[in-house]
Structure formats: structure tokens, C-alpha cells
Amino acid sequence: MTVLVTGVGSPATSGIISALRQTDAFDARIVGVDTDPDARGFRLVDTAATVPTAESGEFVPAVAEIARREGVDVLLPLVASELRPLSEATDTFEELGVEVMVSDPDTLAVACDSGELYGTLVKQCHPITPEFYRVSSSKEFIDAVYALGYPTQSVCFKPSGESEMRGLRILDPDAEQADALVEKTSSSIVTTLDDVIPVLEETAEFPNLVVMEYLPGEEYCVDVLAGADDVPVAVSRTHDETSDRECVESTIEECPRLIRYARELSSSLGLEYNATFRFKRDATGHPKLVELAPRLSGSSSACVGAGVNMPALGVQYALGQDLPEVDVEWGVHATQNYHDVFSSTDRETTTI
Image (cartoon, rainbow, N blue to C red; front, side, top):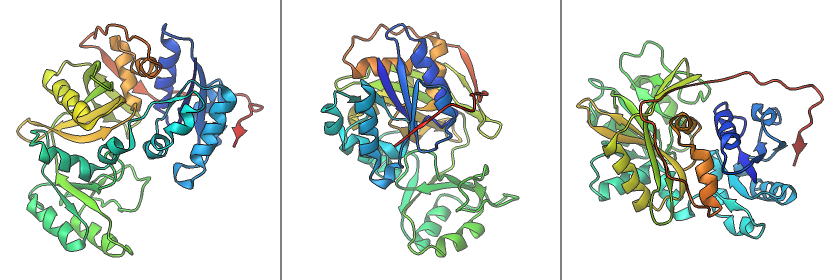
């Protein structure tokens, strides 16, 4: 079985690659691609290749050529920006006999856009909808921030076109050190309204943003494998990032209500293959949806220790194989750390 995995430069990819190698369902030969020629995951795969960025227009042809050359059976994308281009090119890969583990474009149009996602939840009158506003001007932004209780309460905002956590900022009036809005590499996401406004007003075009309530409670994830007709697998777990995101602590904890919500949304949105829903509790303890990753998330490998190999199950589903009965070992605790990878200086990497 040859599986092509994209985005293998992420530290979390090692857990997914390990999970694919652990399964007894198939013997995985793994082709790894990344935009970085020095991607750390290249040392963990059987064949490695660099590819253009998803935005370049050359990404899909490059990946298709690698898939053809390597005899790939399944394509497993791990990078959010690559989902839509790959989804729109499934016919290209079908001609090569490659199953692409991604939902259809219409589903991704909602799942990958937090503004559209929250708007859909409002239409469904879903109880997990956070209080939010979609804004596209400085005045709308300020009005929304104050409507959500600032400066008495902290407020969050992020680009509307992101359903995941990238670009998230927390407005905290008591922040001691403001975080520059445009500094993507900063480990701090906390800033103040006074520091944000000048940066936003200096942009050539005000960005479309979602301003939402700050949720101070515990964080949970539900990892699902969604099929065309049902959601055969759903596992809930706590989620706690520590040490500047270098360590993720999880406990596989049975949360029937969150599992039910994830199953409902997977079906109503038309998700297919792996996805991860991230919830946080508000000040009253009620869970709200903060993120939907319509792909296999790096932290989902935590489920392997509880007897649920999400990456392998996704590949089996993609190939139309019968899925085994899942028996979750609730209560398992997982600690996911970065680890060292070594290679000799003469290791070569294919470039396309």
C-alpha cells in the first residue's frame, strides 16, 4: 500500500506516519512531500520530494506527477491550504487510480471558513454556536469588540477565511506585552485593542474578520472518520497544549454530548474522511465550537494509544475496505512530544 502524505515538515506528522506503520491492516510504503527541502519528516518516509506551495498553481500537477511515478494508492493531505486545490482536482487523481482523502469543494467552502461555519450553525440554531460578528471595517471591528464585553472581558478574533486556529488573536486589556498582529511567528497571541487598531487601519484593504467571544474553559477535541452515509468512528479527548505548543497532553475521555454534536455536524456539512472538531467551554461550562479541521489533525494520533488508529482507518475507508469494530479504551492519557530525527549527510531528496 503506497500512501502519499503531504506537509511532512510539521513536527506532529511523525505521529501520523508512525500510526500508518503500526497498523496490521496493510503494509504502508509512505511517500512524503513538503514545500521545505529540509522538512524533518523526510527522514521518516520511504520516498521524499519537495513540491510548490498550494497557492502557486503548480502544486497539483507536481503532486499528481509524484503520485503517478510512485504508484500511489491513497493521498493523505495534512495542510489546510492544500485541501481545496486537491478537492477540485480529484478527477485528475482518479484517472491515476489515486483516492484523495478530502471532502468535496462545497463542503470545504463552509468547513474551511469560520464565518461561513458559524453562520451555518446559526441557521441550524445549534447550541454550540459561539457569539460572533463578521466584520470588514475598522468601525465594525470596534463595535463588535465592545458588543462582546471588551474591556471588561477578553475577546477573540481571526481571519474569516480560516476555520482553524491560525491567525487567532486574543484582545486582553491587561496584556503586559502586546503581540504584533502581523508577526506570524510569535508564540504570543495576546494583544490589546489599542495596539491592534493602528495595524489594521494601515492595511491597504481591511481584512474580513470574525470577532468572537473568549472561551475560558477546558478544551476538548472530537476526532471523526466520516463516511458518505454515516460517521462510523468518533473519539473525544481533552486537549491541552503546553510548553509553547511543543507538547500536547490528551486524555481519551468519553464525552457523549460532544461526540453527538460532532456526528451531527459531520453529517449536516457533508464531511468525508478524517476531521477534528475542537470545543471550548464558556464561563458557564457550556461547550462551544471554536475550530473545525476537515482533515486528519496531528494530535489525532493520540487516539492510537486508546485502540483507535485514525490515520489507518481513514486509509482503509478511502480504499473501500471494511472497517474493523472500534473498541475505545477510555481513560488513556497521551503525551505527544517533538523527537529528534537524524540522517546521514548523503541522503538525497527528490525535487519537482
